[in-house]
Length: 344
Ligand SMILES: [Zn+2]
Ligand SMILES: [Zn+2]
Image 1 (cartoon, rainbow, N blue to C red):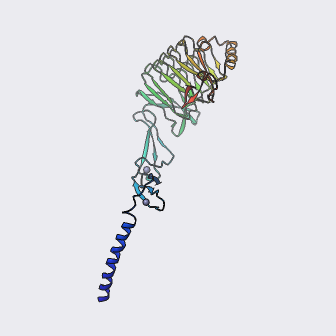
Image 2: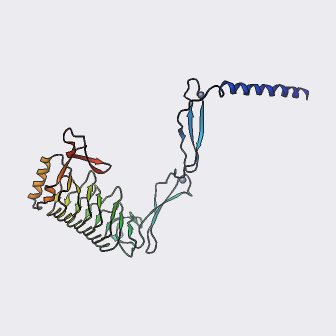
Image 3: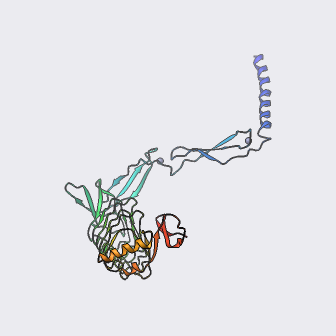
């Protein structure tokens, strides 16, 4: 008993001494020069992360850590989106589950309710979408139906309706003729990234006079007769870099009286009066790199009996250059974030 008490009496002051000595040796006499906080463990949707900072003073390697809160959006999505098809009365949707916590799900819009699908081949290998009983002004076409790709939009299906926007999935390869003709409220046409669209057939967007600009996927090969005829608000037409376009049909952009600029890919065939009665003084962003190449191509067009396309031949032209040109940089352009942009 007595030895134990004695020991305790000796240990307590010894501990106190150590504590006080430690405080004066570091904490009290040295103000740490903290480096920036660095993320050493990233937070996820289920686990907090860690940030660490270190004293930069020589001889001091003191570090501090602090927690990063659980990231509300730091999910790890499983990768597979599960599609629920639209019905006549309910919108479709797609969901994906977080691999860290199956209670976390993400949802994105699928097919607009009322859309219907025609099978291609028997048994079906793909589907073409038609308007069905859809009444919504904002149409989302799904990439799949019954697990198969939606590859087409049926002839004339939205013609003369009051739709205002349409999202076209990457799976669609063909927009059949007159599909959106006379949609006078249609303002927004969005092609999903990675689009496989090849054909915009005749009259597809004819008289859609609220569309102001359109970006054509690089996969597109064919624009039909009068495809954008009388799109009177259409100001800019951009063909994505690497365009596979081969044909712009006759009168395709005729009476597009607001047209300000258009990208013209190389080696394409342009039909008669493709730009007839478009606004005088448009800027053409040619994918050719100089006037000589351009003239060879234009003469070829006339030789093909494609009409004169005066608006094209008289247009202000910019030539394509990936490098900053040494002289006259304002005559050359390149894509910046997908938008044709003049050097200097
Ligand atoms: Zn320090
Ligand atoms: Zn999660």
